[in-house]
Amino acid sequence: MAGDFFLGYDVGTGGTKAALIDRSANIIASSFCEYPLYHPKPRWAEQDPEDWWQAVVTCTREVLARSDIEPGSVAGLGFAGQMLGLVPMRADGSPQGMAVSWMDSRGDAQAARIIHTLGGKRLIEMVAGGVPTGKDVIAKMLWFKEERPDDFAVISKFLDTTGYLVFRATGRMVVDHTGAGGTGLIGMRSRDWSRSLFRLVRMPLEKLPPVLSSIEVAGLLGEKPASAMGLAPGTPVIAGMADIPAAATGSGALEHGDGHIYLGTSSWLCLSVRKPKSLGKVGIASVPSPDPNLFMMIGESEMAGACMDWFLRELAREKSEQAESTGHNLYALLDERIEAAEPGARNLIFTPWMFGERSPVADTTLHGAFLNLGLEHRQEDLMRAIYEGVAYNLRWLLEAVEKAGYPCPALRAIGGGAQSDTWMQVIADVTGRRMDAVSDPQQAGAVGCALAVAVALGVLNDYKEIKRVVRVRRSFEPRSELRPRYDRLFRVFQDTYPALSRAGLALNRDADR
Image (cartoon, rainbow, N blue to C red; front, side, top):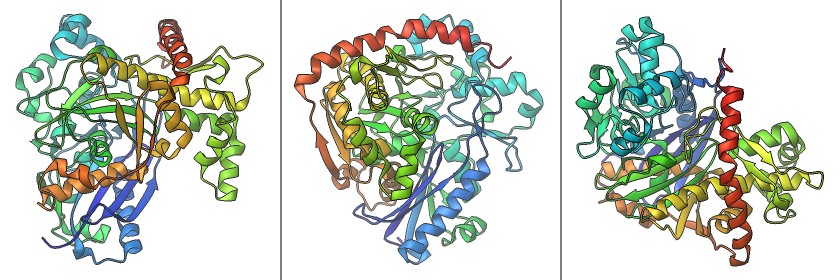
C-alpha cells in the first residue's frame, strides 16, 4: 500500500465535508464547502452535481494544504453521498439536467400509481415492508419516464450522489449496494438488482448501473481528476456508500442491535442488524450495511437542525449574529438560553414536519406547527420546544423498533446537534435512553467513509474493528423524574398528527398548480 492516510467525503445537502485520517482514526485535517439547494417549484428540490464535484476538489486541496502531507501518502479515498439523490446521466458522461434531491417529492402521482397497480397500501406493506412516496427513487425515475420522455430517452444511467462522484473520479458508472438498497429495487440476499421488481414497476433495468460492494475498489483516480484534486493518479477509489451507512460507520454502532441517531439538517435513527424486519408503517426501511454480513434499518426524518436554522433566521437572527461576532459556538449560546426554559416548554409542542415527512409518518404534504402557543411563552420556550419536537419524532421511531425486538438502551449520537449538551440531555430525557455523543460528531460520515477505505485496503481486518477506534466524548443519562411529563407530552404529540395531516393535504396538495 502506497500510504498511511485515508480520505473520506460526506457529500450532504448543505455542503461537503472531507476528512483525512490516519490508521487510528485520528483526524489529521478536515474541510467543509457549501453549495445551494434549489426549489424551482413547490415540493421540488434540486442541486447542481457540478457543485458537488467542485466542493470535493476544493475540500481535497484544503485538507492537503492543512495536513502538509504528500499526495502519494493518501492510500485511498471514498465518497458517502446523500441518500436517495438522483442524477440523470447521458452516455457521454454529462448530466441531463439538475440532480433531484432526496427532499424532492415530484413523484407523488407516480407513487400513487405504483400503490394502485400493486394492490394497495396494505398489500405492499405486507410484501415490501413499506409504501412508496413521491420522495422515493423509483417514483422520481418514473416521473422522468412519464413527464419528461425526451429526457428519459437520452438518459443512459440514473446515478446517485455517490455514484456520480465515483464516476467523476474514475470514469466508471456504478452504484454501491447501500445506495442500490435505498431504491427498494434489489434482492436483499443477493444485494443486486431484482429483475422481477423492475418488471413490476415497468422500469428498464439498463437505466441503472452495476452494483458493487461498498468496500470494493471501483477504480483508480484518473489523471484529470487527480490533477484537479491535488492527489496522485492511480489512487484507489472505493465504491463508497450512502451518507447514513457512512454515518453509522463513523458512529461505531456496528454490532448487531447497535443503534445511532443523527442530528443535522435532517435526523435519523439507524440500527445495525443481522436480519432486518419490516417496519414500513413508520417508514423504517432496510438496506444492506457496508459490512457485508449485516443490514441497516433506517428511519429518516426530513427536518431536525433545519427547524432551528429556520427559527434563528426568521425569528431570532440576533443569536446567529451574536455567535458570529463574538466567535462563540452557536450551540453553546443556544444551550444557555434553552436551559432557562423548563422541561416541557410550558406545555408547548412543536412538530418538526416543515418539508413533509418520511418517517415516522410518510406524508409529503404535512407541515409543522407550534401547538398550545400562549402569551406566557417566551423565545426560549419556542427554542426548547424545537429541541423536544425532534426528540419526540425520534422516540416514535424508538418505540417502533423496541416493539420489533430492538430495545436500544443506549445510542451513539452524531451530527452537528450532538455538539449540544442540552439537546443530548433533552433526547435522553424524552426517549428514556442513554445518549453517547461521539468525538468529532460532525465528521462522523466523512470519517466513517475513510475508515471503510482502510477496511477495503486491508489495514483494518474486519468492518466491526472500526468500533474499536471510534471514541465517545460524553454520555447523557435520562432523568427519571422527567419521565411522566414527557410521556404525557409525547402522546399529545402523536395525537396531533391526524389533524395536521388533513390540514396539510387541504392546504398543500395543489400548491404547485
